[in-house]
Image (cartoon, rainbow, N blue to C red):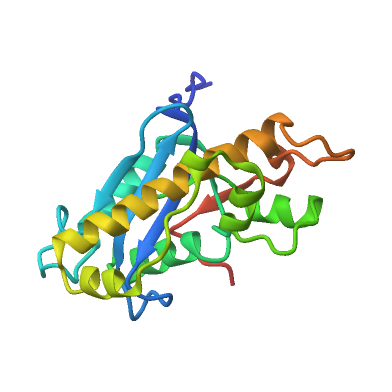
Length: 206
């Protein structure tokens, strides 16, 4: 009988995750930057102008590879509307870049919890921030001209997109504490632990 091999512990127990992209559809766009924020620590940021692929600034294969390597070392990954955008976008870019490396992690979409448990007029992250978060945790406004320039490789505009992304994961951490640790007092609050799914970025549902 072979000896049981214990799985290696993940490097980060719980992290927030967010992507900023050049288009909402992954066959038309690329990942401009990705932020992964371990709870209680600074964000880890990957940006396309610092990790261009062999084909240049429109090639995000190196960024996707580095991001998957990091996510593979995270115990739980939480996002906002991430089941419907970030995870799907990452999965599609991984497939389009023909990357065969594994990419799997436990995932919880805080938007799903928020939508099912509370009754704000909508469930956008900035609405939640305006209702519950301190001033220093508010999202930055979207400047579409900066996004357009960032997509063309302008470093100053990518700086702005990175700042926006990092603010998103910082504000998401407040939402995580409220929903996961009971900061919002609502009878019957469902912990995101009960909404976890294991995400295989390299697999596509039939």
